[in-house]
Every structure is written in C-alpha cells, then in structure tokens.
Image (cartoon, rainbow, N blue to C red; front, top):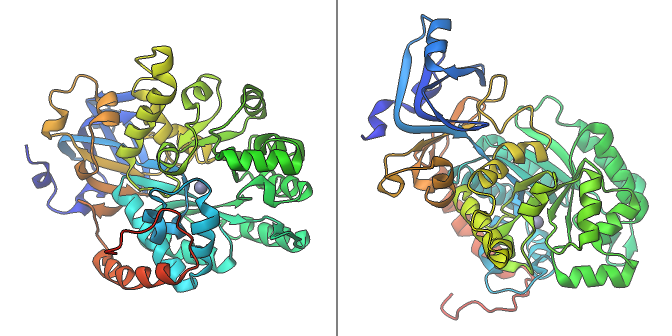
Length: 462
Ligand SMILES: [Zn+2]
C-alpha cells in the first residue's frame, strides 16, 4: 500500500489528541505490533497496546499508519559538524588526517562559513535518520555559536562540545582562561531545548595532565560528557609512548580524566590492559566503523566491549550522515575484524547494533532520560519508516532487516521533539535547496585556498 496517502499533510503525524497506530513500533525490547502512541507537548505522553490506549483515551481518534514502522530517531555519538566541506577529502588518505586536512580547513572558515558547513552537516544527519548528533568540539567561541545557530534552524538535537586543550604548537596556554571559558560554556545552555553542552580535549597529548583532570572534573560536576579521541591511530599511540611513556587511554587514566563522564571516540587500538582500565572506569566509547574503513588502522572491539558492560554507541565521525548504512557497516566491520576469525556467525545479532544506534547511544551521551526510546516521558524524537518496499519482503526478523536491508529512502518523516523536521527527505519549514546552492558556490573556493596537504591527489579533471 502507498503509505503517503495516509497523511494529507506531515503535520497530521503530530496533531494533538490522537492515537498513532503504526503497523510496527520499535520498543526498547524490540519491534512490536498492535501498539499505540500518544504525543503531547513534544513528548511521548503514553505508549502501550492500542486497545488499552483506546480505553484510556476514548475520545481520541486513531490514526493508522499502515506498513509503517515508528522507531526512535538514531543518535550519532561522534560527529564534527564543522568539517562537512571536507568530508570527501579523506578518501585514499593515510591516518591522522586531522593534521593535514581538518586543522587547515577549519582554520580557513569564518563564522559564516562555520555556520553554513554545520547547517549542511546537520541537514544531512537528519536526512540519514539521526535526530541527535554529538559534536566533538570546535576550537572557537564563534564556532560554538555558529554550530548552535545551525542546529536550531535545522531542528536537530545536539551535544555540543567546546575544546579545552592547553598545549598548542609546543606552547602552554593559560589554563585559567581555558577553564573559565569551559565553565561559561557548560552553564550557557541551561534552558535550551536542543543543545546540551560538553567539553572536549581532542587528543590527550595536547593538554597538560592538570588541565585534563580539571576539564574532566568540570564535566563531572556539571553532569556533562567529556570527549576525547583515543587510540585511533598507530602513529598517535607510538607518539604518546615516546612523549609520555604511556598509551593515550593510559594517559587519560594517569591524569585522572578517565571516568564515567568520559566519552572516548574510536578506541580501536586497545591492549587487554586498556580494555580492563576502560571497563573499570565506567567510561563510554563511540564505535566509528566507517571512520575505521576510510582512515583508520583498526576496528574497535565493540562486541567484546558491549559484553563487558562498557557503554558504547555508534558514531559517524563526520564520514557520512546515514544511519542505516552506519548500522550495516558496524555489523560488517565487526564481523570481518572479530567475528570471522573466531567463527562467530551471529556476532551480536541485529539488536546489538540497533541499540547502539538508539537507546545505548542516548545513555552514552548522558541523554538516556531525554531520548533514544519510544517510552512515556521521553522527547518525541522519532522516524516514520516505510516498510512496504521489496527489499524487506518477506520479513522474518525486522530487527536484523533494519541493520542489513533498510535504506534512507524509506524514512518518510523525521520528527524531533514532536515537530516534523523532514518529510520525505526535505525540510518542512526552510529552503534546503537554497542552502545547497550557497554551499556549492563557497565550499570549493574555501577548500582550494586552505593549506590542506592531501597525500592522495585529486583526479586531474577536478
Ligand atoms: Zn573524530
């Protein structure tokens, strides 16, 4: 059945005083049939068997959503919204592209360009089914404001970090100033409906131990996430050993910055000792399989970490904002790197990757009470996914189908906090094509003028 005729306007999806009755509802325990959902004031007000809800709300009409799955929006636990102009520059590049591509590129962006690149990235994330993204940090105050403006206009939830490293090019910066800015950032978003502040030290080696500890402590006191990239590249692990005598994750631990508020991106090159340190610390991990494929040295032991009780969510690292492809890559990468060598044909099954993209990711970001599940009291952050496509027929296990077979073009609606932000891939309240024209005119000029060093050259026709 063509599902689009079910709603004559996208707003009908979130109209008040009605019971939504999708064919399938993705609950925390898995996909279920025969369920109903009531949305009020941007939240899920009630969720349960449809008959029960009909009895509870006898005056509410039922809006049937045939062949549709209503599921939580995906959550990207590691993104760099301000780097979207350069996402295609990493192809064919060896590791540590941040030194050759990201820092030169970001250094060439003024406030307006930061806003445009962030808005483009946020839009791409929504199109890919993400209703929350975690930005790993920008270097300037203007950058934070530009990203915040972009995410507000696009309407995506965002954990937004301010970077706080005090070592730069062999110089030690004034930690007191950095910490004052950090505190200011943590307290600046108290009543913001979409932005949750966070602090970041991009890699442990660019901060003194006292600043690592102090920044972690600020996050601990504020109940916010402390972000860092650890043990992603072999060259960085070896540099850390040479400079500090310990590996990056051990460095965080030694400095007092490894604890339950830490969110570690990548964590691909961990020794057994470090995995134990990680487990004992309560720190969380962002598993970034596409980043491993494009510019990494290894694949994180995500399945093992999950089994050890280490909190773990999926992240794109700004590679591509496509949640279903991320799930697929998460499973495939895990299988190639860690399942096949030991004959594990299940390798976590479908549920583990779906959870890492939704409810587990929310926990990792400290947003477990806010989003990541279809349950009463949580924000109405959800996707309406059309299941009437040949790729999903016949369906024996919808959970695993969503990991291996589902596609971005099945996403009919993206809703954040009860507001329809995209309908069939496009915004309902702003002109995305105008943004794309603007970006197209500016991005190429910026990238060509930035002092970027690509090892793998552009084809000569570009
Ligand atoms: Zn990153």
